[in-house]
Amino acid sequence: MIGERLKRARAAAGLSMQALAGQVSISANMIKKYEHNASMPSSGVLLKLATALSVRTEYFFRPTQVTLGQVEYRKKASASKGLLKKIESDVIEQAERWLALKNIWPNFPIKLFDYQIGIPKLNTLDDVEKAAIKLRNDWQLGMNPLPNLIDLLESKGILVIISHVTQADKFDGLQANISGQPIIVVSSHWSGCRQRFTLARELGHLVLHNVLDESLDEETVCNRFASAFLLPDIGIHQHLGEQRANIDPKELYFMKHEFGLSMAACVYRSADLGIISKEKARQIYIQFSKNGWRKQEPGQPYPQEQTQLFEQLVFRALAEGILSESKAAELLQISVMTLHKQRQMLAEVV
Image (cartoon, rainbow, N blue to C red):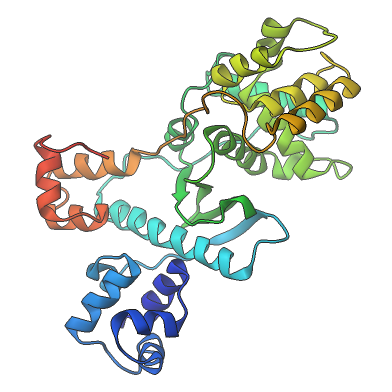
């Protein structure tokens, strides 16, 4: 029965029953009956519903059902319940396709996340700095900039989902799990720096949650962890020195594009480490506000991060004969003809 899937797709599209009914030329009462499994739409109506909701008809009959566990939103007070429902529906739809792919594979090549920070208790923010460096060392990352955070996290067994729901300014990230696998959700509407900071912060929540002293605020800790993980103290000292009376905006711009941390976050990091005073940081922020840089920083933005792991695994499964072309097309949400073109490199892969 399609009721629950129809309801979820409608929530993801942000449509009321009346609005959806108007798009498919039926009554709102019929939509209600479909969602309560009191009636089944004809094939013609089902096609119209799929078009209106931007899903493939196969979506309504997909057997895999996903339940998000341990959901933790980072959201602004202005984020409505409707917006959160849209995000959650979008995440569940993408997670279902992940789980469907995983269940087809005899031995799924992505390991489960299994990392313990190995520190009994974090009592100070200095301890948080050490934890960020310890994680870098444990993962053999060195102190250099991290070019692709999504690739790194997915290689460690953390599923990253990019939501395309709008109103992204009211949503600061989501962490949950499906079947015991942690997932982190970021928005396709964010800048690359914001995506990376959210990914690093949610990683902090994941690995530090059980080792924080009660005196520490977890959100403050994870923000500090994210900054230290993306821009280690040795890196910022190499760029700025030990102590400065001022920092030129162009210096911040160069650091932003090397480490993938916003100019404003680099200022905050500099003050945290005592390179500049808190008062100087405040003055820089005031100038940023006057220049309009708090909303949009100057120059070229840092590139957004992309996830390609799902597509890579679909094509690998095709090559190994694990997956049929029709199932692969369904999982990728494209036509079989488009899939043929992509396999033959006759069309640009997007």
